[in-house]
Image (cartoon, rainbow, N blue to C red; front, side, top):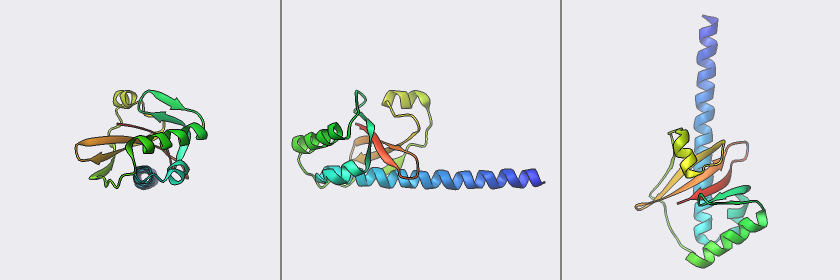
Length: 136
């Protein structure tokens, strides 16, 4: 009986931690996305961490290169006031799907939907979650 209570308690604690990490990841990804769309490079950079996976093709190794990438994105696309239609954590832990997205290991994938478009934002888990990549 004592073992069963312990297992139930551990399972409950794990579920609570997992839910909390998901909410943290959603919040960080959404704030990161909104700050990038508004051209708030300092905020976007503060919520990011290198190495950074960009668009399934490139790994950015330095904070300076990452800031330059954000500046180019804002310059190319302009500052925009875009509101996502949904922000959801990918509940599927399909390794093949994650490899296809080139999601960094040990990251939570957050899907930000804007109309028919989806941006995949990868958030590193931990005490202070950080965005470690994105792809569309």
